[in-house]
Image 1 (tube, rainbow, N blue to C red):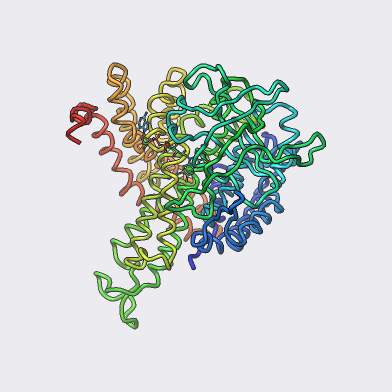
Image 2: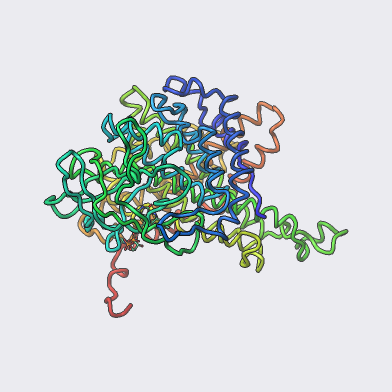
Length: 597
Ligand SMILES: Cc1cc2nc3c(=O)[nH]c(=O)nc-3n(C[C@H](O)[C@H](O)[C@H](O)COP(=O)(O)OP(=O)(O)OC[C@H]3O[C@@H](n4cnc5c(N)ncnc54)[C@H](O)[C@@H]3O)c2cc1C
């Protein structure tokens, strides 16, 4: 059975030392989040994930979901009880507004909990995860009545949520969407069409399912400008809040897929289902973007989560598996062979994953705090910077953390040799589960295009300029600190590469958009390397300071500092390769005639 221990200690280092949460006491909800309270909350969340969610990961993968002849869907054994424990613990509403039954705590805590949940059981965690995205969209764009009708039940966990965008002929290009909405004359619409790949579209965990559905109102323009968002409950809700008739929406079939078997991926048939407009007509994509942005960040967290759990298992195995002797002579002469963790190549692999995990976690905490500032600060300038960062970082978090999350799951699997390839050890599941994170919520190539095509130039390049200034200033402030030299110098070099690549796009992509398209994925990864390098430099500084306090954490801080050095020496140099690739432009990529492929 695979192991999992939630990294609470690492998170507390981030929240106490690197990005002190106490500094944000002026934001609503933060005054209650004292370090002790936060630690207690996360310890409780860790317990739920380790003891209730994780033990169902392997069995959920093996059993999968079943569609019954009446269209209902049965989730794997004990998933429902685990979900109920999550709901009863108030986790769904951790950061949701108190007026709808939430606890109003910082949403960064929810982001952290998402990592624990997804590491423990990605498929199970998606049911509440999607609900939280739907809650966010309704909070921003729902009418008062919609909020009153749906939010308390969703926050309580009694009802779950879904997002319905994809259709058989329309995935990335939502402008092709065909599902139609016809006014019923009473303020509601009749929704008809087929949606595919709908996660958690049907299941047996909750009394009701609240579908957020993109559809085109009869007569609306073609393309993305004619799309509207609707709320379509599985059971209609009576005036007194009780459940009424079954609505005209049902699960036609379940997809058989590579991973996340415990999550029901449904074909959803809408046959004149009653729905109500959310937000303005023909502005549905705008409204859905609230959910999509939440989901993109959550999917980035999923990427990290699979890297972390796969790493933990690979480390346990590498300490236990005896093969060969250390190159410098036996380290455990009393044993028939040394554990494989003595071998430099094994250590290189494990450290590559560890160095990513810790930086990626810092990145999601930093981004989570920015999300709180963007939503809760009353200071306009502070809010604007945080919003700019959210826009800039969303494709990076989604694309980079999931690409590397998958790569790392494969690397961790490699540590098991042939035993990683067979199902028994659970490593194959981490690889299979991690794979979807690169695809859904906008395939990663699309994230890269979003970064280069939309986010870089937005508001005259304000966000990227602020980022360059922040990292540049950090490097300058710490340039004289000998103890940080190993971190600052490579970061400065990486930042230079990122600035050159950005400049290259400015000079070469306007006139020739293929240059942007051909370099986008390299740019996204170059960005990821630099922002994670920045996270490492900040962590190194905090670790030095913490070590100087001499409060018994020296070993832990030394491990942090060494892992950061590894990142700077072994991963950061890739910025040069990425820049070189970007600067070659699109000519060769686009020259090959289609028939020659
Ligand atoms: C398990 C699972 C769960 C899912 N859950 C949901 C859900 O809950 N709700 C929902 O609505 N959808 C869901 N999806 C759908 C998912 O979001 C889409 O599969 C995804 O957005 C890609 O769309 P597509 O599959 O149609 O691929 P396509 O759009 O056909 O793209 C195919 C490839 O072409 C590339 N490509 C396409 N256009 C461009 C372009 N302009 N520039 C560069 N490259 C391009 C893409 O990057 C991709 O690699 C789920 C999918 C799966 C498999």
